Length: 354
Image 1 (cartoon, rainbow, N blue to C red):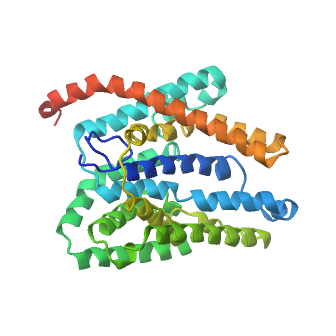
Image 2 (image 1 turned 180 degrees about the vertical axis):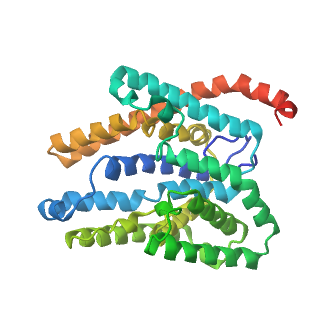
Image 3 (image 1 turned 60 degrees about the vertical axis):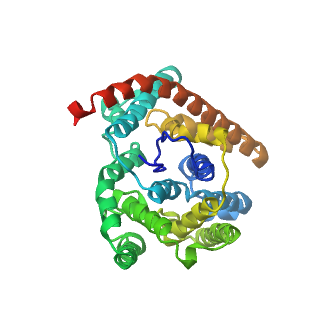
């Protein structure tokens, strides 16, 4: 695979550390999203009235971090996925490895989390369990078809498709949620649209994508602040407003695109950044595993309800995230060592496998 920026490491002599840093930051933002509106309830009209500062801080946090998942998919589309048998096998091996690790940890610290439906959850057969993993596997499988379209389509055909696709998603998948298969952006359909959007931006860098990098950052920050203010006042008026935090929300997509473009316009090389980024996906596989995510969330809830100081609460959560971050990275380094002989076996028997 040629520097495809998928969630798995790519064996290259030289990697783009700017985009690898983006991968790391996006993973940190995934942890932030989960610590915010997965672990904690979305502030409603009562919470906004009783503690507006806390509510505003939560909305601000979500506004800055909600781009994380879209950024991961855009990164795959930026370089393009080039599927190989051993790369796909490594993805499955990584998932299995961290599922086993999660079961071991849960059996020690939270044995009740292993029940019910252990085997169903172990193999991700329940709805919502490792939803990103399953959706990304679907994108990986469809990538040859998407790549064939990219290779054959003219620039005009490509642009027309994107306009029609996102218009359709805007109307039926976001404004009115008139379909079940966009699922607020938690879907293969939306992932394929993001993948193709990033491929187009990278292949055809038209004027609107050639802004100064600080203009890209300004757009990202402006959208984050706009979403913060919008959600605060919607909740203050008793409105739901959750649609603005959907992954297929146009503002969220635009914010993710410009956040990615900012990093694409920075150039540097760092062995340390690349070394960490190779294992970044492991962070998701640990803290969002079906057997462990409640441990992660419950700790945050207890601190939120039991600590009076907002600053101390943030410090507690930050230190826990730092621990999860490094524990996951180091565990994945061990996983990579285990993978070496398996990878050699697959490569040596590739003809027989296919």
